[in-house]
Length: 285
Length: 285
Image (cartoon, rainbow over all chains, first blue to last red; front, top):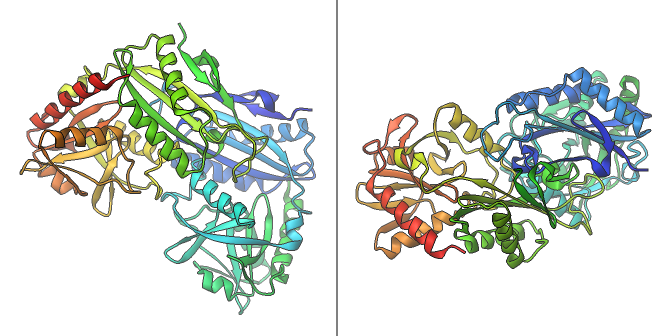
């Protein structure tokens, strides 16, 4: 059976889910997206994702076409219609389709809102047990990485390079320091048992899972330090891991082919993963 | 009558011209575009645009779904079907629509090719006589501006800022120097009658009109120097102007509200505009 997608007020088969070629998401990457995980048919940490959606659209002066409450209702209806148990809901808001193509914002054009779902057993993903390798690439992105826009070509190229190298993620490097992964936040655990991750700024996306993991770690009296780190430091660390809505917490066992720690998922990554999954289940909506 | 657009092999009314919400142009800005001017129903400097298209898609390892020759045939057929006399043909190639959303390149997916036209009397545009004002904004774009990708959100924001300020273009500034306009190349004419424009590099788009104007100026023994310039230098210059497929050569008469030269289009901008229009007409296809 064809999956159901949402496009501007209608639930339609994914194969018929289309937007105008004049849509500014297609012409200009003039749009914002979010991905929320789904466990047992329920949305994970969704308030955090929708708060970030509101922030991102605000940063580019794009008005949401629906209230946050209504957006969550649509997410839930889409989960129900697709009988989605485990996976993700993707949503994208763009500045809509005008009658032609002009860079400046169109007037009187309703923003586009689309959503679709995908299946993924995030909790039992094979890579959670094995860990992943990452490669490093220069961070060539724009200066407003805090905005979750669909202008993702740099990330596409980074993650394609990772895929070609047989790695699970690309860590982007700027001024000798890791900014973040192509679609995840980067962490290390130092030999002194300090969890280190780069502070939020225009240089990285404020990760929702990053934020939750930091909060959960601090609640458990684990030491968390927000500062940038280098690849040399990561290779000298006890552990490394990434966080994102679609992997939760995921151990990194090698960087550019060099082992991190024991070369297998470490106890801290495993522990934080368990803690996050508990949090996710207990706060899902 | 509804305009005709081209989408993946079919000529369809623009109102029905759509792409899947899974199209990577819409999800990731994973696409390349070109805009060719049309005068008297013929394409201007089109070989240069199609050569740049080939270069851009090559830089992101995207295979064109049609030959360059066939793409030009489609452009011409679209002009004919729309009875377009003066205006532009927009074309966009994306990495197509896969079954889901994955950053890495999909396998076995045919790229998307879309085109549409717009009417504009470029030769007799009012702004050609009055000149335009530009504002300056920080250049916040990614590091591969030589690739003509649809990841244009920074340019959208720059040109929206210009529109709000009543200006016709935004000049982007990096390290105290002008890179280029939001959708045009930037030039000045110094007090010594040297035409100055920034050399091609990863920092700017290699403008087709820029290239032609440079060649035409050099053919006429005008002195052209390729080097970056500052706003201070532009304000001290005799003239300033921009070039692009959709404006040809366009005088800049003020920068951030401060007059350039006499505050009206200067003789060099006017002369180069005439020379370019002659070149355009005589080489159109």
